Length: 212
Length: 69
Image (cartoon, rainbow over all chains, first blue to last red; front, side):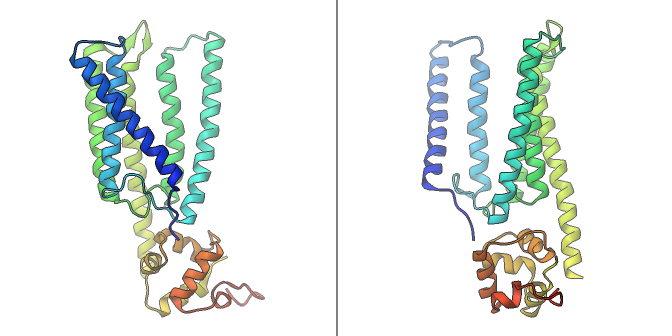
């Protein structure tokens, strides 16, 4: 009853992963040779590094099988519902952000932070629905290993977030700047941890009811 | 609508939800959702459950005139 990803999907994931690795290596080599692409180079490098660390953690949680997430039919249906809601939410958020920009409404937050907030809210909706419907973890994924991975990513984000705030401050030109993005991600991972804990308590009660 | 027939067939085989879930290749919560009537499984999953429990589709999933619950 397990539903595996098609070969085509696997190839797409492999391609994205390969591009991230190649881009990371090229940029790292260029940086080592003293070249700089732009003033945003560390941010791009950080994003690519994030992709690589995430891939490593997924590899660890799936016990060596990066591209093989096994969901059953109910989980796939729940995931599709969560994806749909998150996508609709993202469209509304993009519309709001675009409206703010077009109408030149002065908000005390940079556009980049607004976009990150939009991503976090959409991801939060998707993750909450998937966790509460038991479709977040695939059948071949270790919840314990994912927990360790989340803790690691959360701590890294909070560390980089706080150190960026100390070095550069949260405000630039009177607006909350991009420097808070790591801290926002850390808070998001903390939120996932809380939801997982709540779901764990619900499951434990359910299992106890089944035994009685 | 709760599927008590499935629950009793599973208990008759002395299997937990987790045991049955592993046998048919789904999550424990999926079996729980089927028993609680929160999820209608596909015919493939129904057949797989029936084979594991040694029952027919009628015995586990047919809803008759109100006495089947």
